[in-house]
Length: 54
Image (cartoon, rainbow, N blue to C red; front, side, top):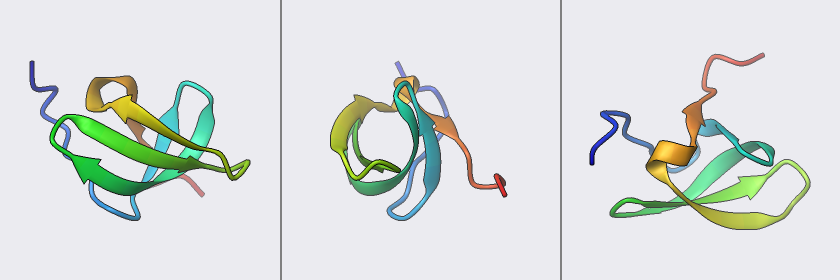
């Protein structure tokens, strides 16, 4: 099921574990580098756009 939100490389997002930025998008899977340096993969539906965060 499409959430309607498209993620692009470099986009800031809110993941369940905290803030991060998209490093790769592969179909419905989005790989995110979290602010603590950890890299995790999520379904797009698990992420929120955070591009207008300060």
